Structures are given as structure tokens and as C-alpha cells.
Length: 102
Image (cartoon, rainbow, N blue to C red; front, side):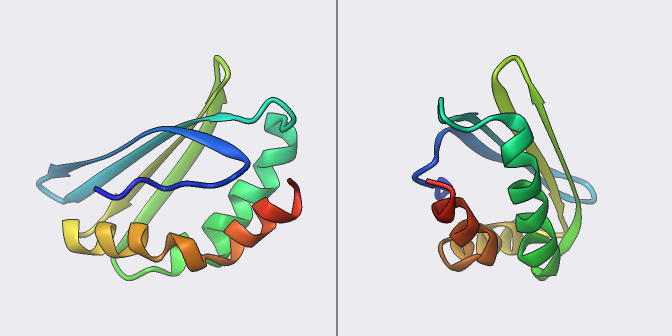
């Protein structure tokens, strides 16, 4: 699957796992040294509110920060809808907010 990349963060991994009720997408990343979890939290929330939650097939999304890593878990109705969302990431409104903080 296509990895989600930003200039402010180094992506560690992205995986999608099928389940009976859809797909679970798991993204883990390290924040850049100059970005704190407190500074990133509103950007992450904006990404959810302005882009991810509006994608076809979106069910739910949770994110957390622990041990220096940011993790996001997204539930999708189908693998195709999960992939379409990942493909649309480059044009996501919240992604522009990330670059404004570089």
C-alpha cells in the first residue's frame, strides 16, 4: 500500500488489515524533533475533521502518542475505500497545515 509521507514527519509504517466488518488501517510515525505531541495534536485533529472523516467508507479514527511515536488507527468499510483515502492524502487540507508549521 502507498505510504503516507509528509515533510514534518518520518513515517515508520502503514498497514491495512482485513476484518469481517471492513479494514483497519494502522499508521505509525515519529514526529520531527522540532514538533511536540502538543503542537501536532490540533493538526492531527484537523486532518481527521477536514479530510479523513469525509472520505467514502470512513467508520472511525483514533490517534495517540506514546514512547515517542504517533499512532493512528482508522476503520474503513472496504479495502478499496481505505486505499482511495490513502491515495487522496497528497491533496488533504490538513496536510497543508503540516507544511505551514515546517
